[in-house]
Image 1 (tube, rainbow, N blue to C red):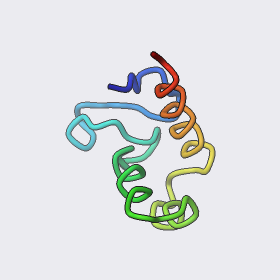
Image 2: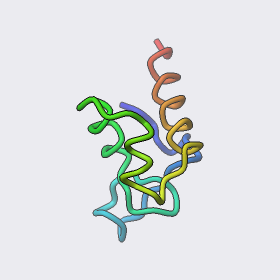
Image 3: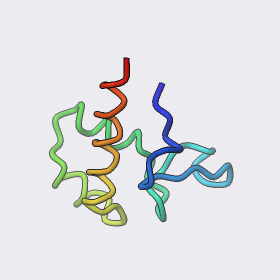
Image 4: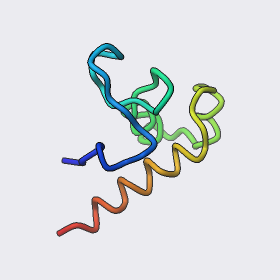
Length: 72
């Protein structure tokens, strides 16, 4: 399981989206990015659909995910 607390682009607040990890400063769950990419969406599509999220945040989330795969 990923330790999202180590990713500076996200936050979790029990009062926001039932405590899900969201992109910092938004109510957009990180899960929305993963699900959209898995469904074939491009990053540009996601950014257009969720204008509160920045490219820098998306890149940070993807980098965090990639780093977690390198941990044995």
